[in-house]
Each structure stands twice: as C-alpha cells, then as structure tokens.
Image (tube, rainbow, N blue to C red; front, side, top):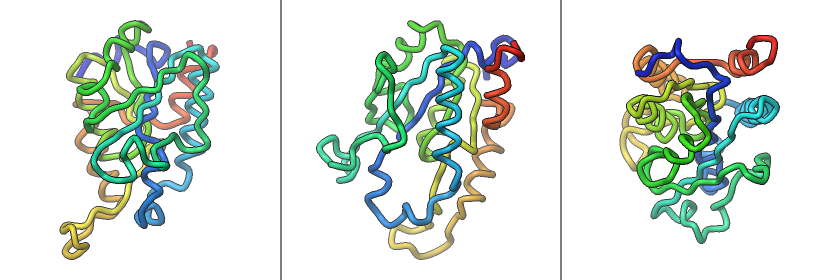
Length: 197
C-alpha cells in the first residue's frame, strides 16, 4: 500500500464504479445489501464537486445480456447525473484500470488518492482498490457507499451461501492496512471540508 499519511482526500478522485441498471435486470436486486447506498453515493459526489475534486464514473460490460452495451439496462442508474467534463469510462475487466484509460485520466488530474464506491463490494470495487494500491495510489474504501448480493456456493443456488454481511466483513478485513483505509461517508465529507484543511 502507498503511504496514507502522505496524501489527503483533497488529493483524491471519487470513483463511482458500475452503478448501472444492469444489476436490476435479475432477481438478485431484491436481495441487495445497503439500503442507504444511493444516498451515500450521492453525498460523496456532492462533497467532491463542492471541493472541486474529480468524479469519475465507470460502467462494466461483458457477455451477460444485461451488461451488453446494446442492452437497455446498460446505463447509469437514474440518480446519477454526470456533469460536463466528468469522465464516463467503460471497462471490460473487473478492475477499473486494465481495460481503460483510467490511469492516464487520474494522472492528468494530478490525482494521488482514490475513493472507491460502487457495485459490487467484493468484486469490481475491491479489485480496483487492490490494483490502485499496487499502482501507488492511496485508497479510501467507503464500504457504506458500496453494495453487494449474497453469493451461493453453486451456480444452481445449492450449498452454502455467503451473506452480504459476511462478504462486507471479509472485504474490509483483507483490504484494511494493506490496500486501503476503510472510511465512512462522514470521514470523507469532513476531510474534504475547508475547515478540515
């Protein structure tokens, strides 16, 4: 992990990862975690905009019907409204870097830290946090601005199932102190405020 004490949230960009209607196409949406997800993401977007820091939106496409770029579900969720100049990046890998121009985009803005939000907690969000740390960015993982779904052991739904709380606990345990700081929305809002600076 990079040196968290050498940068602040005022050096950061906000990554809004895969917050797209594709996830609403199937039955699992009814079992999602985090009812406050939308409001928490919206709070962070507002805080970054007020502080004049970059907000980057990312969408995921793959062979699943709802994630095809031609699907009517392939669009940002309704509560997200990128402003002119805010990048919208399309990826085909779990992390946001490998298949995109995210790295040069962040370097262009002088970003040294990233704040991770989006869907799913343990997949694209966690993977992006790990890669970002390996690339030398400091990382804030805002778990309460991510969401996920229960994971069955087998594709037919049989066997053990990991609950969303188990997934969240595991993600925070493996990221903390190695890849990311686990932060809250309140933490980020406070650290972006002029009074904190």
